[in-house]
Amino acid sequence: MLPKLYELFSLIDTDKSEQIELEEIYNAPPEVQITLMQIMKVDDIPKIFNALDIDDSGTITVDEFIEGLLWMVEGGT
Image 1 (cartoon, rainbow, N blue to C red):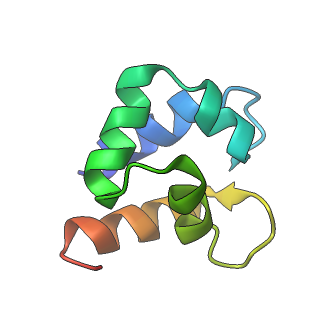
Image 2: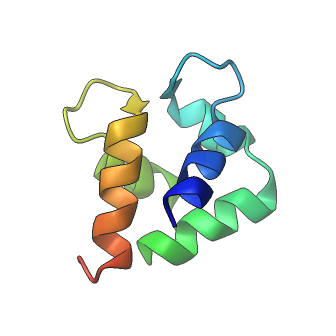
Protein backbone atom coordinates (compact mmCIF):
# COMPACT_ATOMS: atom_id res chain seq x y z
CA MET A 1 0.00 0.00 0.00
CA LEU A 2 2.74 2.51 0.92
CA PRO A 3 4.56 2.28 -2.43
CA LYS A 4 1.28 2.99 -4.23
CA LEU A 5 0.60 6.02 -2.04
CA TYR A 6 4.10 7.37 -2.65
CA GLU A 7 3.59 6.84 -6.38
CA LEU A 8 0.26 8.68 -6.19
CA PHE A 9 1.95 11.58 -4.39
CA SER A 10 4.66 11.67 -7.04
CA LEU A 11 2.10 11.75 -9.85
CA ILE A 12 0.41 14.78 -8.27
CA ASP A 13 3.62 16.61 -7.27
CA THR A 14 4.46 17.66 -10.82
CA ASP A 15 6.93 20.38 -9.80
CA LYS A 16 8.81 17.86 -7.60
CA SER A 17 8.79 20.29 -4.65
CA GLU A 18 7.90 17.42 -2.28
CA GLN A 19 4.72 19.33 -1.46
CA ILE A 20 1.35 19.31 -3.17
CA GLU A 21 -0.57 22.50 -3.85
CA LEU A 22 -4.30 22.59 -4.57
CA GLU A 23 -3.61 23.49 -8.20
CA GLU A 24 -1.55 20.33 -8.64
CA ILE A 25 -4.51 18.18 -7.60
CA TYR A 26 -6.74 20.05 -10.06
CA ASN A 27 -4.13 19.47 -12.78
CA ALA A 28 -3.61 15.79 -11.94
CA PRO A 29 -4.76 13.22 -14.49
CA PRO A 30 -8.45 12.29 -14.10
CA GLU A 31 -7.61 8.75 -12.97
CA VAL A 32 -5.46 10.17 -10.15
CA GLN A 33 -8.26 12.50 -9.07
CA ILE A 34 -10.73 9.59 -9.11
CA THR A 35 -8.39 7.46 -7.00
CA LEU A 36 -8.10 10.25 -4.42
CA MET A 37 -11.87 10.71 -4.35
CA GLN A 38 -12.42 6.98 -3.86
CA ILE A 39 -9.89 6.74 -1.01
CA MET A 40 -11.13 9.91 0.71
CA LYS A 41 -14.81 9.08 0.09
CA VAL A 42 -15.31 12.69 -1.04
CA ASP A 43 -15.83 14.01 -4.56
CA ASP A 44 -14.80 17.61 -3.84
CA ILE A 45 -11.13 18.41 -4.50
CA PRO A 46 -10.91 21.39 -2.10
CA LYS A 47 -12.35 19.22 0.70
CA ILE A 48 -9.77 16.52 -0.05
CA PHE A 49 -6.99 19.11 -0.01
CA ASN A 50 -8.15 20.65 3.27
CA ALA A 51 -8.51 17.24 4.91
CA LEU A 52 -4.95 16.29 3.96
CA ASP A 53 -3.38 19.69 4.75
CA ILE A 54 -3.19 18.84 8.45
CA ASP A 55 -1.12 21.89 9.46
CA ASP A 56 -3.13 24.35 7.31
CA SER A 57 0.06 25.49 5.56
CA GLY A 58 -1.53 25.62 2.12
CA THR A 59 0.53 22.65 0.94
CA ILE A 60 0.44 18.92 1.61
CA THR A 61 3.71 17.25 2.55
CA VAL A 62 4.36 13.63 1.73
CA ASP A 63 3.89 12.77 5.43
CA GLU A 64 0.50 14.52 5.58
CA PHE A 65 -0.53 12.81 2.36
CA ILE A 66 0.45 9.31 3.44
CA GLU A 67 -0.93 9.68 6.99
CA GLY A 68 -4.22 11.11 5.76
CA LEU A 69 -4.79 8.48 3.10
CA LEU A 70 -3.79 5.61 5.37
CA TRP A 71 -6.20 6.91 8.00
CA MET A 72 -9.01 6.89 5.45
CA VAL A 73 -8.08 3.44 4.12
CA GLU A 74 -8.15 2.12 7.68
CA GLY A 75 -11.70 3.39 8.17
CA GLY A 76 -11.36 7.02 9.24
CA THR A 77 -14.19 9.39 8.51
